[in-house]
Structure formats: C-alpha cells, structure tokens
Length: 94
Image (tube, rainbow, N blue to C red; front, side):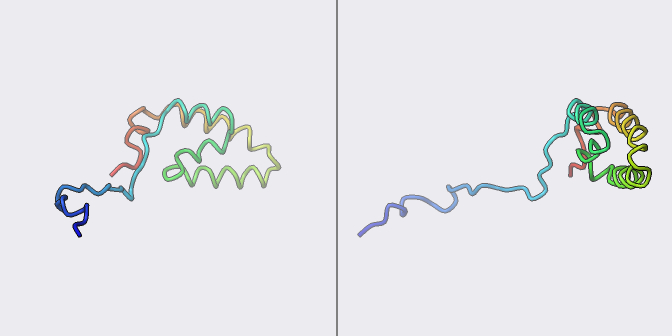
C-alpha cells in the first residue's frame, strides 16, 4: 500500500520559521497616549530602556505619598514626546 506522503520531497516542505527575538515596532503616538493616560506607568511601554526611570519615580511616589506623581507625570510626558520616531521604530531590534 502506498502512502499519500511519498509524492512529496522533504525539500519542498517549508517549515515555519519562528523568530525568538521578535520585537514589534513601537509607536511614538502610542507612547505619548500611554503617558497621558497612565503617567509614570507610561514608561512600561519602553521598559527595556526606561526601567530605571519607572522604578525611581515609583519609589519616589510611594515615599512622598503621591506628591512626586505630579513631577513624574510631567517628566514621562516630556520624555516620551521628545524622543525621535526612529527611537521607537528601531527600539531594541537586532
């Protein structure tokens, strides 16, 4: 009895290739909107680059009872909006 799979060569079958280091393109518009909506948590969108800013500001907000949150909100808004579009386009791409 003949298998139906005998007609195919192994070379013809393309296996899907998965990239373990897939990084979707980031958007400056999304970064600014997240900064407006979530304040200090807007830095989580670019966490690989801005992790230290997030943790420093979160700790200062906790220590000052939230008063530092006003400064943090202004800082994250200015920080995310002044970065060039290329920063987001090539954000940690290999």
